[in-house]
Image 1 (cartoon, protein in one colour):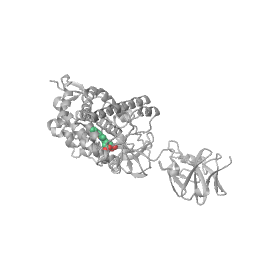
Image 2 (cartoon, protein in one colour):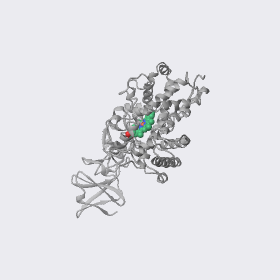
Image 3 (cartoon, helix red, strand yellow):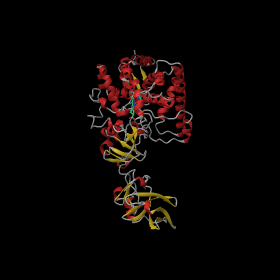
Image 4 (tube, helix red, strand yellow):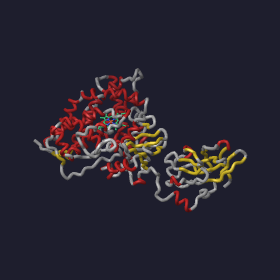
Length: 536
Ligand code: HEM
């Protein structure tokens, strides 16, 4: 192959790299000790763009997982055995230009022996959890049922690890998670709910029939986040929420009336699921005739956060659009006929004299309240009841002293967090837990793992309703995105447990049932929980 002109010589300077293409292939030019060199520009490990990597000592470091390559030979450093050598090309300069010969050739300096040394079969990124047997996969049935052993091993052996399967950096220790949450400038929330943010064109086409996705709280960074958070936070302060307690008790008792005499019920479907749904529907002003649609939208919009087959993704996107059109019409109706309710408040809300919210912003807020407040609270009620049934002494303690119920809710949130983890994006290369996290990396913060970190909680796997510091759990997150509905969820949890324990005496698990959790990447909750009691 003839020599190809690829750059002017003054474009290639010592201490930097210059990315160009030759014969349709990306190559990386450098000048090392005055001599020009050219190697492949894409990292052989996970496809990182080497032109974004740091240059030092005649080597370039991949910005993704830190593989190091010699700029002249293309050889991977022995410190990065997980990457294979890159091809190097012959280079010369002539009349002020750099020329490259793209003829196929062996990587400079490689031999059968060194190739084997640099790319042993099965070698992986040094931060890969899988390389240490920590094969993080929340979609696998065994990990869905009990992820806690894997979390513990990660905390002890590799507290920040890379999951090749999901292209995620997983953070497992309490104090590392807090560090991330305290630094929203470095760790953005823009993709905080996304395992994978890509959308199939068919799904996008459905979403295009609705209103544009507008970040307001959970997926927004300051200053946008601050603006919406201040506004919505006012509606969910402990004082504003406490006013709802009598009505919550009515809803809880009304649901129990339907099954109390049977002496036995599947408590997730008959109670834990409809209870928070009816509460939030009342707050948002949804008429009871529309509850079925409301339930379906809520389920489908939560499901969208996990990996789904395409037809289900489309179905869930349709629900989202249905939800948007429904609430856009309700908002319009309130504009014409204002009431004393949350929707009317939203229409009139202005922050610091700014303009009113637009419809997309209001819909974004409503969506977060709906999905933030439903499945999570359902899961909390289910797991709290299971923990009490499996720890009879703790159940007896609550019966003897109802004042312990509030703390039992905190302890259930700690031990079995309904939101196992959420995501952040690194805005710069940063060191965390002794690991270098590249700019642009997607992180999952495993709140459920931090909650069982013995560096923060004594005897962390034990369910103890009297635990003095249970409320220090991170089940509601931490920092600027701390759950806005925490006061509401805590009250719902307390009212639910008080009402169930009062009205259903001598509660027990129905023997022989198999307990399974819903399929979801980061939400954890029981599918069913059969309880029996001494019916009147
Ligand atoms: C047991 C029940 C609940 C759990 C476990 C839970 C969990 C969480 C967590 C972990 C976060 C932090 C998000 C992050 O770090 O990015 C969060 C934020 C949020 N939650 Fe909850 N939540 C619950 C109930 C609720 C309820 C009842 C509502 C609505 C009324 C709600 C609405 C929200 C909203 C809007 C945010 C975003 C706040 C922000 O970004 O500033 N949640 N929740």
